[in-house]
Length: 331
Ligand SMILES: *Cc1c(COP(=O)(O)O)cnc(C)c1O
Ligand code: SF4
Image (cartoon, rainbow, N blue to C red; front, side, top):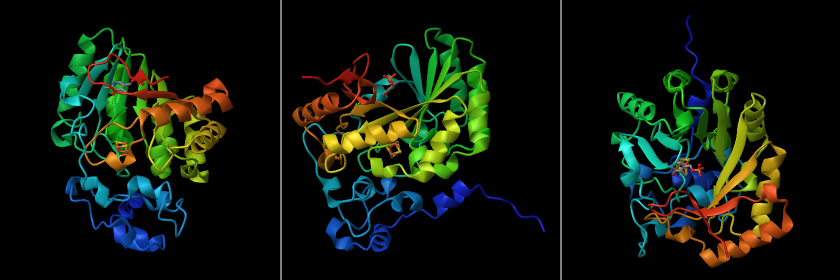
């Protein structure tokens, strides 16, 4: 008998929580506290891998991990300034799935898929089906990159690029390797945190075999996200010489205190990851309830500077349409 082996991370995704009621039941929380059945925005329904849910505290409706992923009635609130494309991605799209905003680096939307649906995500309204480099679009992106000598770093983003199969990733990396002026490959992925099973020795090998200097920028917002399974994943990557950085989003009720961020930075460093950016929330429609004011943000950041060595303090930044880089927020 032939048994086909399904990668365990596929299995983990299949088993993920998709029903808010079920997640509430698992956490022993009354589902009515969220006043939500399912987000009206059906393209962005709840998705939470069990391993991630396992790190939430039972019977705590304010758990910082839970608040990032549970659809809430507040998502239907609108506010001035909150819109569908808050960071000007449409204007920066040079080819389908290729964003070129900043000097020297270009970003590929490798796929629209994610392992988890973060309710504050600024790409929740992004028109993914027409705008990723999967399939035939990749050749147009490659042509663009080949013609732009000044680009020495390519960022695979999404969605989450590690949702792609090993073979698709391998092909993408091979195509990029043909372009001599590209020196660095950067991968923006929340998967080492949310679906650490995906980080296999085979994947680490694919990343380490390329001629590029490789950087993986993970996305963690709270120290409770970083358990033993995440440690194994980051170790596997760092052992291959991959540089590991983290970006977080400053989120109301999730990590809006110096204490929470201090713990996050020190935990990250203990598993080989350096804090890189702390982003102000992008003002995407449906995320008003996550916003922290600039004044509060600067106050929290100031406290971090006063209590941590400089290398453990992420840069507090925001995005402004048309700017040549992410912009620092400072007093
Ligand atoms: C954030 C971002 C980058 C990366 O910026 P760095 O400051 O180099 O981390 C690149 N391209 C786009 C379109 C981005 O949004
Ligand atoms: S993993 Fe990243 S891209 Fe995907 S929903 Fe979360 S924040 Fe958005």
